[in-house]
Image (tube, rainbow over all chains, first blue to last red; front, side, top):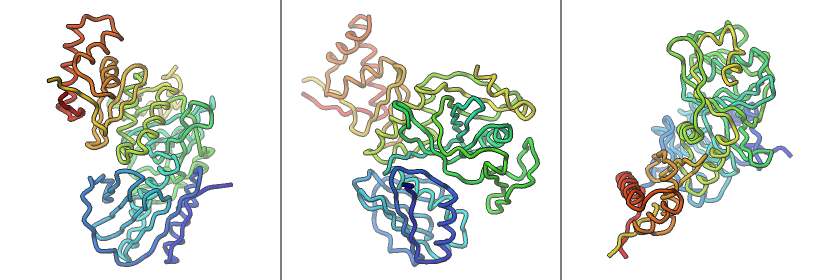
Length: 308
Length: 90
């Protein structure tokens, strides 16, 4: 049985918009979670003294799954509540919010989904997932602008399988004592002014983001929904144009994964599970600091040579 | 009167390859600690005096009690600065 993020929206436009986006994500989860979305004026704000976790323009207040989680997208655009122990989020958005579909989906609803799927064992990390020609799983972790997407696009064009260029989830592995990484499927997005090793023909313009996007298949790659990483790389752009790989200690790798998976500190009662998955990940994989240069454009196989 | 030290309840310590990363869920800060730090933090699961922490270190490492005490005091001071400890009197 396929489990998914189920959706019930009172507004047909929202049902269609969010429904298509969720269907596209093909997120595999161990049991279903639910989104219920209404378009209506937001409820009156309630005093809430809990610490705020700020994700872009979304303010998140939660201390654990045994109390409610509240997300506010603002000012005055959206409000969501997940009741204690529940895997259902009740979301309210205003008419004005619907004029910003990209932010509505990729910031507000995505953050609601990230919190929901934590309750069924998926823990978000900013990372790209790939499968190399030797059938090994890769996770490239890094902040925006660190070269993840360009490198993922390049490798996808050269025979690697790809899952995502940014939105991934740590889960208990399908083999004993492993952590797997599940991809949220969406278009790999490159800035229109980005220097890339290929032209942007065939991509879909993502006007609101100033980017062009491709699904894996549009890059000639196979979409890979899940990998067991044997290589974890922390990416940055090389200043001198030359690529390099430096092996790093597991504890250093753990700190770096935490930096790109800040939800770990959000809810005490699931933090142990999240930390356990991270620790397993950095122990099962070879961990590297990658400086990514333009020499990869002409010789993508260099990345494999650098880790040998 | 003896001071007893224990880990703040919001602290999570994850050890990999002997070293560790400490996450404070309240402040959302995290820190790397060395192998000795992991040993002391492990002992701090229970309220412990400095003398008890010194024993925990000398049980694990071939160091003198004086050197271990210096390490323990230094480590506790660092932890205190970052509000990682609960301190009580016995």
